[in-house]
Length: 384
Length: 204
Image (cartoon, rainbow over all chains, first blue to last red; front, side):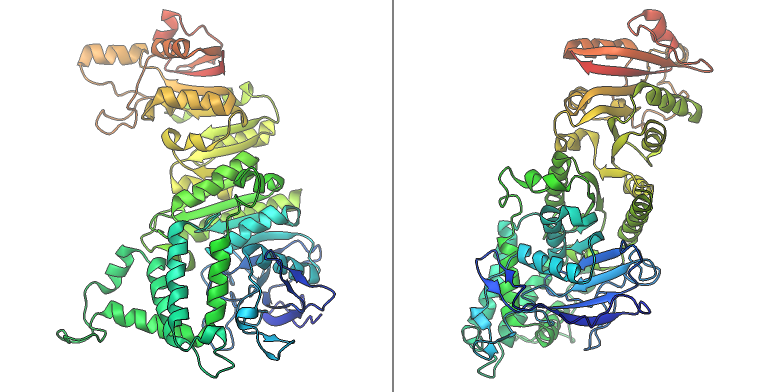
């Protein structure tokens, strides 16, 4: 095991890769197995002497482990409103861990990793993964870092699904859990949008049945279209209209299919920027993992049964009024199940017109509520 | 409600509940009652609160509170999940008080409900003399802005409980400068005297 992101030193942000040998394979829900698992992760802050201040942050579909520090490509850390000095999750108080999910393309084992059997990227021979597999890999990392109990697991969107899975699978290793703009299962609409994205990728002639890397090409057009479609679902109609309205790129219409409207140009830019940082096969695998996610169905007796062992975990669930990707009723279903399980649950629907993406933006109500929740949880943990 | 009466109200509730009870406070505001019950009665408390500001304030105090409204979201709680469900000065402000009362007693083994008494002598006198909707200490808003859309007298409430098969285990009236003492809420004199009243209710 490589422990290049060591635990404390000066508390400065670090990134590293945890390598698990063949003696510690990751057994997958699909029946497959990953034999030499690598998990790329970052840490910031210092683990306290009691090892009681670790916060695991679970990232969303297309994000990565660089939650509090900049990745090598110089992009800004993706959750600077929530994580950082003076923020609710603060390296001065917390030991902050964020890992690239298994199946991802930022250093953790995924479809673009080299298959030792063939010396080629796995491509479609990569086994199917689930949210449960992602969480089991994180649990292996957390254990390898010498942490028995996490003070908090925090995540939005797909990260929120991982938070719920943590509560179901490892409640005894969890003190508190924050689930933002998420759901306990993927709806038909969620699956439908993902299917559009996957079909766009697979329809790209450069996809080559997933073997594009070996053949020296990239399905950039397909991946860009997938991103464009998905990006619309992250915004609300109001936010999109406020940002672009019917504004044109140039004076007058082109009477052609160039990007006349600013919103078209914006989406094209989103698509083009995305293909530079994301792998098409990872997109297929991770969206599939989200579609397969149905925590209630995986437990006899439904969602409440999934949380039965989590009654000592302190939960905080958030939704946004204008989020139509994971709308408030999905969060309420989670809250209902947590109540039925007798867990200590708080829930807040935040008024915002920014759509699903609101969880990544600087929303003062969300920031203050999470700050208050974590601070009081820390006091309680100190007292207990 | 005037500050003094509210505190009397909370104090009476605190004296009614047994220690270590599971309690849901419906309409918990910023969590003052929940905090009092946690501190002095070691209660295992939860809250339901409609305003985001209230929920945020509760989170910062370490209380477990869900955003929601009494008319719509009590259905999210399982049956007999609590020893007591508290609804303080709110029943008169909900859309369907009868259904809400039924929900309180489904979720909790007991309900603690307080409400302003429209039968109080000052309310009656105000209406008689001025011929207008009374504006008093416990009903401070004019008719067009008051959240109290289902006002009732103590007698009305007693009749509703009978109709629903709900048992009144105790009743404490509140009025100026009087220490609360248990009363029989069906007596006409009490309906005149009480500015507001607190009921301990159970399923019959």
